[in-house]
Length: 241
Image (cartoon, rainbow, N blue to C red; front, side):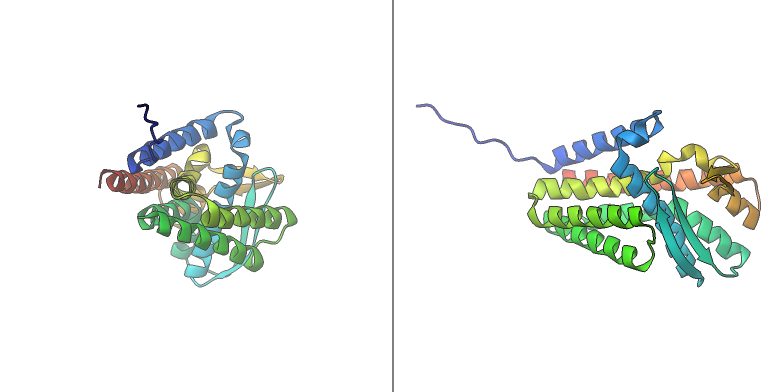
């Protein structure tokens, strides 16, 4: 008698391996000449996370976060106003470097089950909509983020357990890796945005505090990498459980 074999369901270990491969692909692609363009939606999400990191840090230190701009070329800008102390100015600059990684690790740590992963996809979608109506002010940014919110909400509702968990882990990894896309920016004194020269976040921290900008860039990179390792360790630990 011939017996048919049922296909094996994906295991937590295979999900963990898939996430590691996705992380490696993102890291390599973002360092290639056309890598950011190949991962265009992820690159835009990384820019959004960076700028929101500045905006939320601004609110946390008691200043005013006015608006966020997200452009089709992958650039973005968080505009704020106030008269913060030197330490608060450094915190606002650091928010763009460390905030996304902290958010990504939080997602990885909280996603302990498919049910939680679905809930977190819905929460993230709602957070995107909230940010659009509160701070995003240019048409492209609004359209992209609302479409992205719809995708994550639909994924949380209709994807299978494995796919929903993997998507959440991938989103978290993108947040954790957002700093890696602009690694050279972290070790520079500044850049040009829309024809205007602007200091890098590392240079802004150095200006507010002390020590050279490359020291703060190295420190931010080391902390971001540590957060990423912590998140991946949490996923691997769940896979072994």
